[in-house]
Image (cartoon, rainbow, N blue to C red; front, side, top):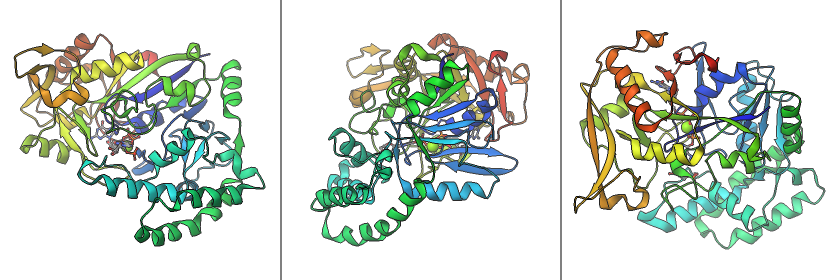
Length: 425
Ligand code: GDP
Ligand code: IMO
Ligand code: MG
């Protein structure tokens, strides 16, 4: 068997959590491969909304194995809280959750370093989620980080204290109190973590595949936040693209099957960095209002703008996307006019279909305009019944990017999901 990968094609928050949850009945294993508590994946069903940060979005299905892979950075304090919150919903996360020995630990000092680094950057700040992601990955690549497997070793506490000391000089005096506050919870949360199944998940996932299991790899963040291909330095610190599923889980590239690319029918971004189709007017405000565009992790308002086809094509290319899923189509229901950026033009009139990324200030987006459907889509269950203008919009995108849009999401609930191509379910 091959593992399928589901990931975001924009700047995160495309709706990955909702769709992983929707697809989970088809899968035996759901595995996170990168990122950490910077992620906020929202799932809605039976009238309840859940936001997962580090736990894979397959956790609500009792028969599914959930894996936190080696590519993830895990904060034990947030982990404990997440698990405890889940217990209120009759979920048994102990028996069907496996954590890689190789996943990096986020220590309290990493959270404080993240904050100190952002303060030091001033106006040039990345707009990080302040969860310690960057500093934890820095320690990973400096080869002195602590991994989940280390919590099982006798010298763990000594090594933890050494690493704390190592970084202590890099944080300003006024943040030491905050560090001490978080630190008091840390060792207790590590004790809790020790009660979970900490294994070599690369063996587990490959064994499951050999035994014929269906495996879904759940991406976090989005392609345009990838540390190599995003608008550096305004990126996260991991490889969010499909290749990250290989290194973050121990899967050979030949073991990857379908790559599901998720995108919103428009664009959002939270945090700093270039966003060429961003709208600063009333239309942008409407997108934010209709889409409830506020971060699931930090509550910050998300910046909003029109769909960017050069960016979408770039993401499809980097990930080898085989099927597209379009999210939040319902958010555009009331718009009279909908625009899509088809290409870019610079001040000398030169055009390009290449996504300008970090050079975007030299380029202006050129739009094609569509008539809005101005009718409600949230109760529609059948693709054929979608408004004609929405189907035109979908067909145009499919033709431009050359990949089919097989799923359309028209609301946050699990049931508000329209599958066009039946091979998906
Ligand atoms: P993720 O990080 O990719 O899992 O996405 P988030 O959970 O951060 O953000 C997506 C938000 O949109 C959440 O509040 C979802 O409940 C919501 N959502 C997902 N799909 C749809 C949709 O089709 N329509 C609407 N209106 N909301 C949606
Ligand atoms: P999910 O998985 C949206 C953004 C931050 C910031 C940049 C770096 O829910 O889609 P970091 O804390 O990683 O150092 O922040 O990346 N960012 C996200 N934006 N969704 C996310 O995750 C994000 N995770 C990080 O806002 O701009
Ligand atoms: Mg999110």
